[in-house]
Length: 87
Image (cartoon, rainbow, N blue to C red):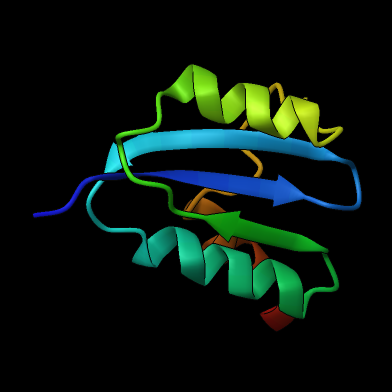
């Protein structure tokens, strides 16, 4: 089973977060999709583990992003967004 990092970018706030390593990003991708549907400018990447967390962090910083204090995307965001849409 392939392991990778999950890097989420919030292009509105110019922040990023790194999750993982992981083998299944489906819940995170669902959250990204819901956030986009809600009007957020969020994107993600899944680089392989050959890149270290520090290398990924430095690349994002070099691109002008700041590491977020909390995760940019979490699977629980999907439930929160869905409940707001239904409510």
